[in-house]
Length: 76
Image 1 (tube, rainbow, N blue to C red):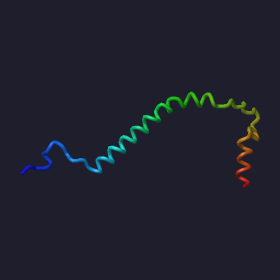
Image 2: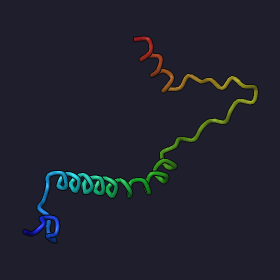
Image 3: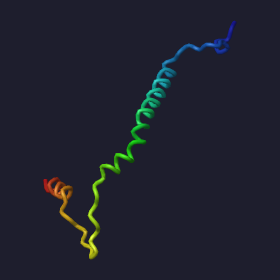
Image 4: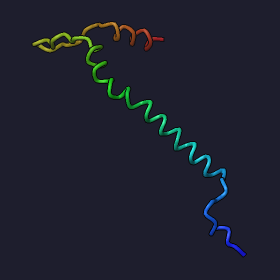
């Protein structure tokens, strides 16, 4: 009698299939994200607005658009 494990080819299993599918999916996701990561710093520098200099005597609060938006959402 031959031992089934001694044979060179093993039958495919569902566990192996899902492991391979998960590995392939993770590889595709990683490859699709990598080019975007390299481009991100240049995009951030171009989109960053120039900030006003800080006041000399303190009191750096200013009623900007994002602060107005916060007040509108917080009061609701």
